[in-house]
Amino acid sequence: MKAVWWIKKDFRILDNQCISRAVEECSEILPFFCWEPSLINEDDYSSFHLQANWQALSGLCLSLIKRKSYPRIVFGDVIHELNKLYGIYSFDRLYSHVETGNLNSFNRDKKVGEWCRRKGVQWIEITQNSVFRGANAEKRRNLLTKRDYRREGLISDPNEISSPVRKGLRSNNFEWNDLCKKTVKFSGVKLSPSLQKADEKSAHATLNDFLEHRGLGYSGGISSPNTAFDHGSRLSVHLTLGTLSLRTIFSELSKKRNFIKGNNEISKKWKKSLRAFESRLHWRDHFIQRLESFPNMENFTLNPAYQNLKYENNSEFLELWLAGQTGFPMIDASMRCLKNTGFLNFRMRAMVVSFACFGLHLSWRFIHEPLAGVFTDYEPGIHLSQLQMQAGVNGFNTIRVYSPKKQFLDHDPDAKFVKKWIPELEKYTSVEIANAPDVVLSGYASPCIDLNSRSRKMKDRIFEIRKGNEGIRQTNKTLSKHGSKWNQSRKRKKQQDPQMKLTF
Ligand SMILES: Cc1cc2nc3c(=O)[nH]c(=O)nc-3n(C[C@H](O)[C@H](O)[C@H](O)COP(=O)(O)OP(=O)(O)OC[C@H]3O[C@@H](n4cnc5c(N)ncnc54)[C@H](O)[C@@H]3O)c2cc1C
Image (cartoon, rainbow, N blue to C red; front, side):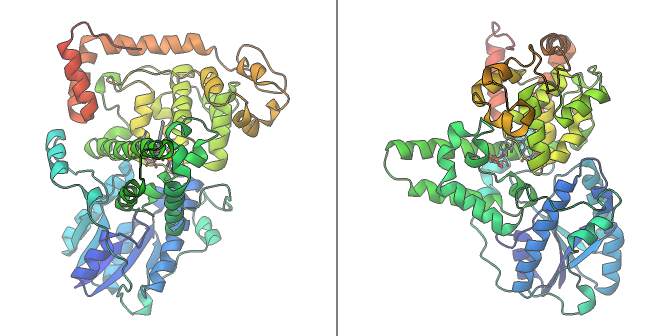
């Protein structure tokens, strides 16, 4: 039996079920990767993603060659390339992981499914998280109690992966400059050294370093942009690309827990941090499940009551926000940091979205693509869920409007982060910077809006929907389909207690 392993976002050799199943079930396996212009040319795909994908693939190619396996890497429409390949190598099975991507990759997968059926190729899709395809929320929860991929044993390293010997089938990864030349969009783009390195080797090094040292300061350390770069796990880009399996993380986490002895202050601190870290790994799958269950989330709010909420979508505001020129120091520093490093901690991400939607009156849909472009770890399920949540349009989460001034005072009181990214503010004191929106600082952008009054307007619009009969009806429906267990129990409590009011 001949197999093709279609490499998608599972750029790894270790603990990869596509490889282990194909090795077990087939006599030879051809690793295949297709650079797809239809995805690359999308507005949510940036040079950050191209670089991360390219690095991850280059690392994987080296590991494959060490195991006597030679990949085929092509550029073009995937159906066209699969057809071409089938013409010279009539394979029986196509192995890939289950992808929950954007609408474009969702539709592409449907076409690949049809192509496989036409050709009589069996497409075996293997899950690499706890997200289920199909089934309603209750059934999914039941399935998860029976079988949780994340807790299963790790697969051993495949020392040799037998692949077809015909030279005509092989093709190496492109050199960076050659890859960039293939699209007008990226022609001439240089590799950026300030982005996190994204290959399998770096993924394991990042995980080890986190569990040995950096993770101790996780709890409490991830809120500030001054500490989150060190104390956060920094695994998001690796989970997005699949350079590390979720199962490997759970396995190492469990080893670390067994290693922590006693009840001294350090042990307690580690335990607290690991608990907080693990809960985020669960949130990850929870949000990806939302997109899996509602693939149209790219264009529609999960809660239909908010679909037609009015926004200005002023392009000038969008440009100021993206360029870090709004006149609000914490917002501008965060946006400039993102543009340079492709990374920002959760709290600051939430703050910049809250500012865009409540302050600038830009809709979550309007900012989705440009923001995805500056997140190297862009994961559509998390990204879209968080955008809608921070915009206050899912109806069941508490509405939080972040104050950039409060975030500055709480998480950057010495203005270290702000001054790093906004050199114009070097000469000012922290007190002057904190008051920036009210007092003009020469040499720095003056505030582009009156944040308080505009936020109030947007909150009023949202609460009008939230309190209306249709809003309540749709929220209950959305909550039972997509809410977490925590949301569900809150809902039950609220129903039992008629005194309970919406909090904001
Ligand atoms: C508007 C907005 C957009 C976001 N978009 C993305 C995105 O595209 N990709 C992405 O990976 N994360 C996204 N996040 C979640 C979060 O900000 C990042 O996962 C986190 O900052 C990555 O840093 P870390 O790897 O050090 O995470 P850690 O804090 O160490 O967390 C471990 C892992 O858990 C997952 N995770 C952490 N926080 C969350 C969360 N709130 N929801 C779901 N999963 C979480 C990530 O995979 C992360 O790597 C977004 C958050 C917001 C507010």
